[in-house]
Length: 306
Image (cartoon, rainbow, N blue to C red; front, side, top):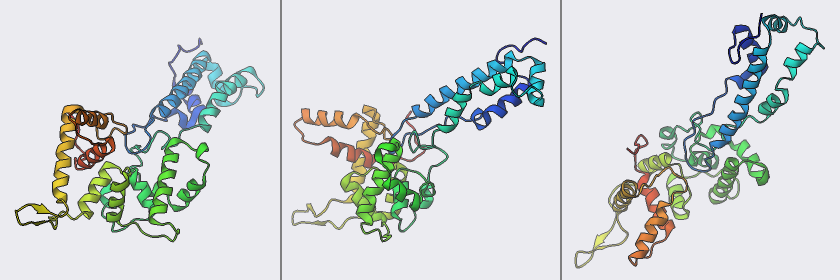
C-alpha cells in the first residue's frame, strides 16, 4: 500500500507518535495572567514552537512509512539494526531530548499561572504569616509551592543561574526575612505591620491579596482627628478619606488616561507627574504610582475594563 498523505495519521501511526513523544504530545502553553513580578509568556511560546516543529517532523516521517512498515514497527519485527527501526529511532531524537530536558517550569514566564494561584480569601483571614507564606502570597502564589526548605535553598542559589521569576522571588524572600525575621527564629509577620511596611517602602503585593488584607486587617473606623478652635480638623487625616480620594484618582486615571492596574510598568504615572509639573505642582512619579496602586487595590477582582 502506498504511504499515507502528509499530516493524516491513522490509529496505528498515532500510537507510534504517542510512544515516541509521550507527554510532550499533550503539553499546552499556559494562559498566564500578568501579576506581580516578571511577566514573560514568550518563554512558553518559544518552547511550543520547537515542540510543534518536532511533532510535525515526526508526523511527516510516519506518513512516509507504508502500512506494512508501521505494522513491523508496532510488532517490533523489524530488524534491530535495520534501516526502518533506525530511521524511526533517530527521527527528531535530539530535538525530543532537548524538549524533555528544557520543559519550562510553571513559573518560567512569571507567577500568573492559573494552576498555582493562591486562595486569597482563605489566606487573607490569617492572623499572622510566616515569612515564607508572606513571600509567596505577595506574588500571588500558594505558599505550598515554595515551602520554607525550598525558599531557604533558593536564597542561597547563585542569582546568575536562576530565571528572572525565581530571582524576583529570591530577592523578596531576602527582603522580607531581614525585615520580619532578622535572626531566623521563625518570627511571625503581623498583617498590619506588613501593610504599613509595604506602603512605606512601596513593596509590590498582589492586588487581590492587598485588597483583602486591607479589608480584614485595617481599621475602617473614623480617625481620631479633633477640631480646633475655628472648626478646622487637626491631627492625622482620616484614612477613609485618603482611601476614597485614592479610589477616585485611580478611577479617573483608568477612564481618562488608560491606566491599567495590572500592568507591571505603566507609563501613566510619569504622564500624570508631567501634567502636574506643567501646572507648577511638585509631585514625584513614585507618589503618583503609590496612590494609583492604593486606589486600584479596591477594585473588585472580577472587574474588567470595557
